[in-house]
Image (cartoon, rainbow over all chains, first blue to last red; front, side):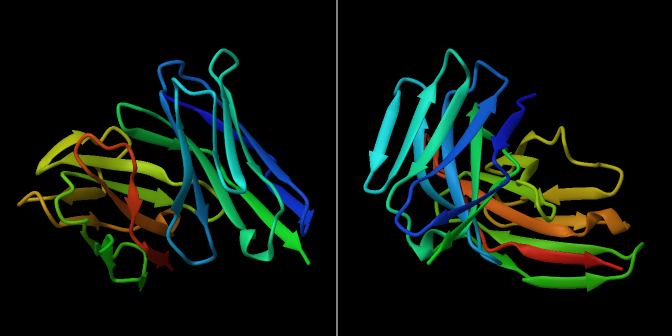
Length: 110
Length: 113
């Protein structure tokens, strides 16, 4: 089955700086790559996703890049704000089945 | 539109007891998923339903876990008997036909003592 590895496990950034989270996946058939944000005690919420026929996607301060050849994808958050503090999960999907990474705890220092 | 609903939100039981969780997906969503999220880990798929049929239950510990979606809408997940290692958050998610995005419910936090 699919194996998704996510790094780093924790990330502390100064407010206003950028944050980058990286994921690798094992199954070359995976074709959909969402990122979820989960605040403490709350449900995971989709923040951005990318499909395998696209190399990069941006939505305001958030961007995702995908390298299918290397089987890795990354989340970039620019101009971080305190409300960006949360756990972020990457996932890879084939046939609508998601396999999640272990998560990255992001802390934005004021 | 209303989101995915789950109940109860919290449950504490003794090991070897039974417990059931309920999920109501977003209206019209044919696909429903149950995930187990152990503290500090990402969600792990337990079972996937398409309408009232099981699509994938390969990671469901069938000796103690069972799930059903009899009328193709609500679903229940049951654990019988519970073990200490079943302590986790159980998340339900649903997806619309032909869409890739999965929407998650708030989860049920289970503590087995």
